[in-house]
View 1 (cartoon, rainbow, N blue to C red):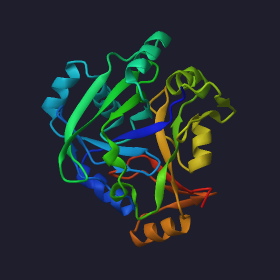
View 2 (view 1 turned 60 degrees about the vertical axis):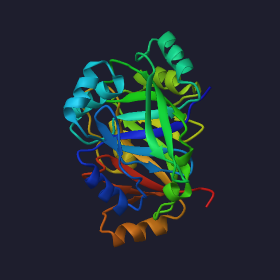
View 3 (view 1 turned 30 degrees about the horizontal axis):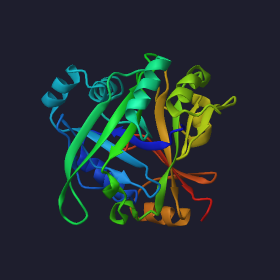
Length: 294
């Protein structure tokens, strides 16, 4: 089974700064949510059932204690912050209906990242009642790739994420269209893409490798190709892919340009996309492109 993009994990120093930046970019940001293992988030949900997760430290002692217990999610989050700084783009999640099956599949392929990580928390349903939501995560680990983590995410009771109040955005955003990582020799990681996404039809070129997925696409490109596409250098820390940009589909680019101009957000037009540089609160490249069906 081929897995599509589920969500992006974006480490941030301060959720309030992230909320302000994302709001200035025209996104509707959900209320802050506290995790029982020392982190917190403030997500942006999209109509195509993808989302972005700005993730911050809520309680450092609690987070580090749980990381030492072997929680892969926290260990990789902490390691990314140590190597790359407190802000960036550390993880890409792919949607699954069965995290246990994916864990077994990843183990068999030599990419197993330990037991499935289950997580639940209380939330308020649309009718005001209390409900329980959660995820079950199956991680893929490649020691050659210290700064990029891929994992499969199974949702439990999260239908409320996709309510219109959460997925309606001032910039007309519809969903994540593509994720880009940069690496000196992308083809070294083609098998990673095949195994984790389940997509065997990987397209390879001089620019890098590319996988079309049920939701969105994922590309690992050379630093030269990244600069050609986005007009700026990817920040790399030696070998291994580093998640460096994502593209959001919108209804109308003219509307996005007007909103960004009004909010004082600098941008550059590159071909059929609008590109926004990294900044505090969203320390990765963001591009907007118009929905082809618009």
